[in-house]
Image 1: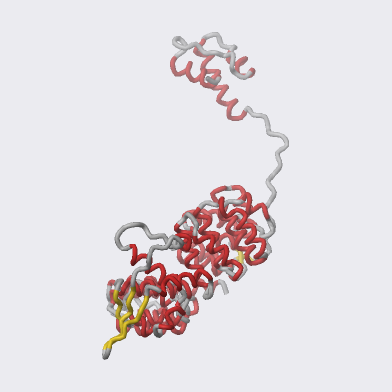
Image 2 (image 1 turned 90 degrees about the vertical axis):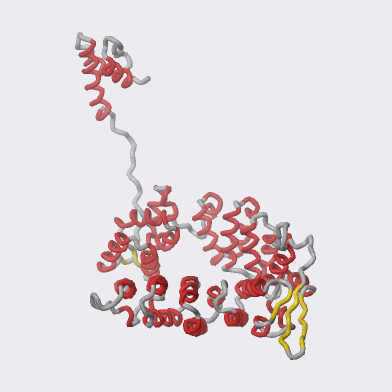
Length: 479
């Protein structure tokens, strides 16, 4: 028990029940208390004097050095209108617009007022997508703050030449180091990644493999082969997806060889041909190729789907064109299972011909939105414009919500034209809100951005116009 506890106990319980012990008090406090004869007075004087002692009775610390200031930042400060916009963004709780604003600030090489950084850092703690653009905008001051507050560590910039960042940095710093080194010194990045690969946690292996996928070369094929046998399903899935970038890989040839024994075309007189599938036989090598099917009913179909999704799409040239095959009848597995597997292959291999054929064969399919993302910008716009004329409003709004972003300018223009032509409808309002937030900045001059006078538009259409106008002004202020 401390001397302070002794004094407090004596005062609370009374000195008759608990005499005050003055021996543990600081010398000055004890001498002052001993000037009183009554125990109760001694206790009260000791408490009063000790309270002051605890508040102000400390000697000044010696040898204290002030913190080194953050490195100078030579970038220009935001224009005054943009600084006011930042205050509005923070109070409006619109993180998607704040993220866009931060990217725009970073692209123009501007910096934000230092006093705004703490609030933005707290916002980025709760929304991961804000962290990278905020770290870029924050610059040296962000690094200074992140080094002193562990909760803002994502602001700490990582030098691509700093080898310690990989060995001792946190997760965000190691990711930043790998991403930068893959651009500046690919050989060092790959050598370093391979040296620690087996000891990395599964989530980091998946993240690092995704980063590597942005810089793939033919030399990475053996590394992907090893990743196919990874113990984590997420890592295996990423490796399977990345093999789509290698049209002539040994993995693709193995998949085609297995699939060749499962596919035939049955020709019928005066009737459409039929694509016949038989389930592949179990193969002990398939788990090493990333194909692991749990035991139970439907194993054969699951293995077949995995083979179709993994085989090079040029395999099917012997059976017909993408358009012919997508429209064929199927025997064996369900038709939707075959089409979904083709869709997976088209997405992995970024094959526009197959993507277009599958969208036309099943416009309302589950993979339609993702397949549209494979098409060229002009073809995306043309395809969505065509679907807007044929799909029910329920299917079309679901498609718009699922379209991969960022959208190209032609697609953004088509979607704004579609919104402007729609009647008042709950589903349209839902899709229109996303369109207003997601169209590229080049589309913000659309006539829909003119805010109508009060009472002359339904509420959701007015909200769309206000969002578009807000975004347009936001970018103009940074120009």
